[in-house]
Every structure is written in C-alpha cells, then in structure tokens.
Image (cartoon, rainbow, N blue to C red; front, side):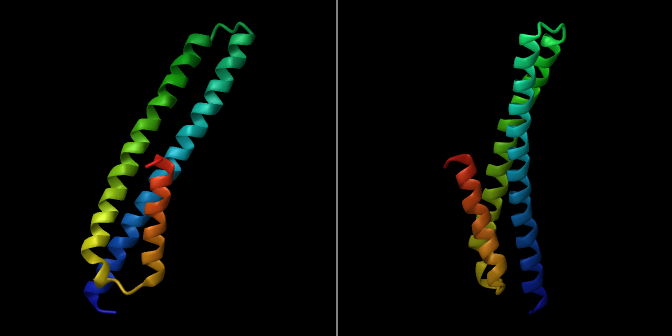
Length: 112
C-alpha cells in the first residue's frame, strides 16, 4: 500500500466513523426525548411543581433531533463525495464495505 493509498484509506475511515457517530447521536437524542417525555407525563399525573421545568427539558431534547439529522446529512454527503472521488485509490474492500454500509444506515435512519 503506498502512502497516498494509506492516506486515502485513513481519511475514508475517519469520514465513515463520523457518519456512524452522528447516527449514534441521533439514536441517543431520540431515546433521550422519549425518556424525558415519559418523565414529564409522570410529573403531570403527580401534579408536580416541576412540570414547567421538565417541559423545558423535553423541548431541549427535541431540539437535538433536527441538529443530529443535519449532521448525519452533512457527514454522509461528505463521505459519499469522498467515495466517488477516491474509491479507485482505496484497495481495502472491508473499509469500502463499511463506508457503503454507513451510507445505507444513514439513509435508513433519515428515511431517505
């Protein structure tokens, strides 16, 4: 493997891992929203005086979702463009498969 190939493979690995990390961030944001919404409903049933504070927590959790989706779109676009440009320079089939899988997973998560 030449230096240019190893540099291309390293860059591809970084871009692939960025997409996967952003997908995990979205999954966490969705889970956090679900957890905090359940907590809010429980507080409403108990007539807790902290309902408005919890409503703010839920609103903040919901704001994380579009942000995470935008980061997934940006990182997957970056990865896709890099793959188109550098695919021939990378001879690591496993890494190419992982990158393609990350793009597929990103599209599934985004529903696109």
